[in-house]
Image 1: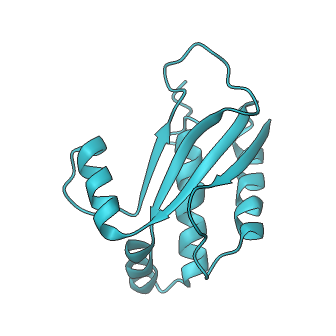
Image 2: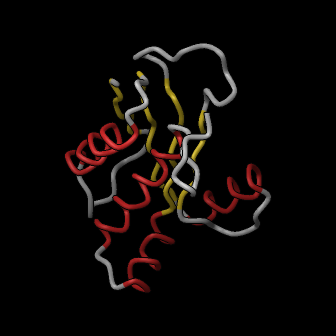
Amino acid sequence: MALSLEFATDVPSSLNKDDLHMALDLVQVAADAGLNGKISLVFTDEPTARQLNLQYAGNDYATDVLSFNYFEGEDDEPGPDDTLGEVVVCVPVAQKQAEEHGQDMRSELLLLVVHGMMHVLGYDHAGQAEQ
């Protein structure tokens, strides 16, 4: 599997790109899906997260993370230059959750990014690939 990251926005100051590449490496090992392609990362604010959550999931609130799998249901195999999907993380919601759970912001953001990446690769909350 050869996955790479695209950064659609600036990375929050509590993270760095090395953290995110490390997270992707862990996801690649855990998923072992044999996929090629890019995963786009977006870090956003509450109004944007709320609008996306309403538009795509029907929920009228800002959520912590949304994942969009661009190849879900497709027969074509993605190539290394294809974007497999996008992970959208709401930074203010992540901050609130970090405080509620007694976590530092870096850990909370990495948790959400990994969670979103696994969804992009086809995993649901039960841990099974949906393919």
